[in-house]
Image 1 (cartoon, rainbow, N blue to C red):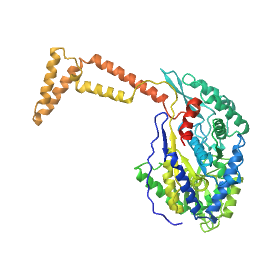
Image 2: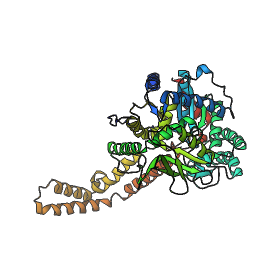
Image 3: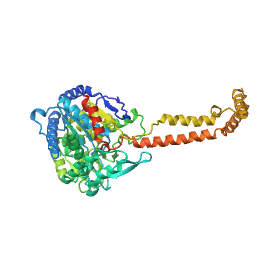
Image 4: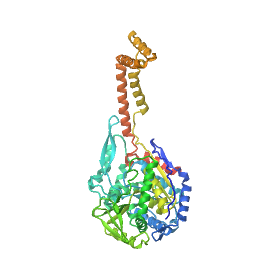
Length: 538
């Protein structure tokens, strides 16, 4: 591995805000070239991955992924086993946590389906279940149009924050009743939300598995089948338990000092390019603690599932891995050593309940480099992968595969007041103008008012000496205050109008958020929109 001179050329992404607006960068019709270029790069790579040829390792990884994703998906929906002639077809991939996410995230699933259909490929959504399950509720608008509010509707009781792959359903009655409770909560504002039909597969899934994230993902995926999406799904946790991923992990750990330096330099350059002061954005730097280097992995055990950072240090011909809490493992590996033995050790660790999972940048690095011909990102992931690209360039000395960025905005079909922020700005200006230029707003029908306005004009036009300017300022202020008494009614009406505008804008902001879960939308609106945006136009 040698260093490749690079620099950031950031792509600028703007989240769409209007209903029906999309972000698709580059345009879907250019994906023919993106996929072809990525495939050509894939075929031409000559990398040694700790004793394994990259092409052979990646080919094994893809074949295993297709068979395992098919087997996993077929447990709850009909999926044909891929033919041998289909194993080389393009793999279009995306991924997200198994949440009840908003339509902008769901759009990625429609995009990978459409692209796979167009290019005769396989669409695979990776369930990112190594992330923390931070909440077990969604925000639901409720109340009335005159007085809307937000309710928090729970699908499970609150528990300690652990990774999705370890998170079990704790309150089965709460989970089973979530669909009816959510539909009832939003019913004053939205009739027949998708949750009415969506939640039945979730409760059915809970009879097969008690894993919360798996049940949420299965329910969504079953519904996607009903509306015509042909995709596979597979959890990241299972990808991490494959031999190719373990070989990849060993390669990074064996060269951790180089990776550590490149990773942190890439983050520093990203922050400098984007003028960011926060050292935690987009992700924190890897730390150093004595002779331990922080590795870009998480680790925990099934007996103690709190996710903690991994630290590593060289001890002779081995690497010591630790969470600096309970876990301490020895891996027979160094930078010049074939990783075969270490891969078997990682397998044994997993069988003993030890979880070793990639952090965000490594997750997409592996998926893009080894498993797919085109990765579809949302806006957040695309920003992160500016750093991933830099690491790929510097660590592997390759040009990173291109990816697609997409998102969409859908607004709940709830009537809102016809008011705009421009009206509020005008109203604010009007009140200010009444204070400093009352002569523009008073009705000049009294001699007293005419005299005061004339006096103000004389002071304004008067060419004062420096020592007299304060006297002029005080005189103008006195006249402005005097004229206020003739504007009391008009000012009060303007203030009341301002309050109404602010109230309407506040209600509109609540009702038109793009962050509400997809399951709150009527099917005929949301699914039709996403199909038209990401499938029919291809």
